[in-house]
Length: 135
Image 1 (tube, rainbow, N blue to C red):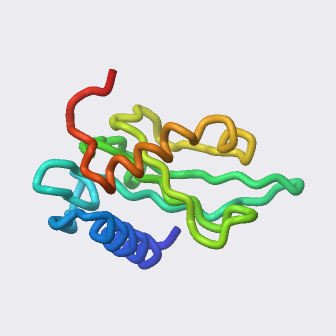
Image 2 (cartoon, rainbow, N blue to C red; image 1 turned 45 degrees about the horizontal axis):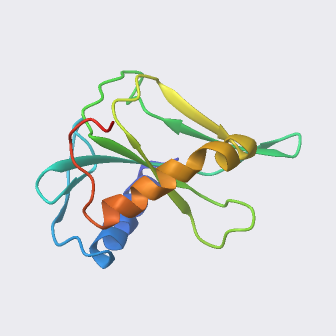
């Protein structure tokens, strides 16, 4: 995904978070993340459009920057573009660090694994996430 689309996605996520009640959403620059929420949570926004091979959809999110894995964000927010049957992107949140260079989702993996990550996005919008390790 090109840099302009990435910045557009970050802006849209910031607007979504503000509409959910977040007063303080600041853009970050560098390896610490893309957004700072309420002066405490560093969020890395990753966007992917689907790749289609043999009629199967998949989304790949690059966690690394230029081949270097330097995870400093508290959470990763994945924005799934053009999901079949959805008019708008789907957002999911995962606690960092992830410890991998890329994350891949097939349609099947999305159906079976995204539930908790979708709830984390709702929790993020409503101020229920912290930097502490979740149990």
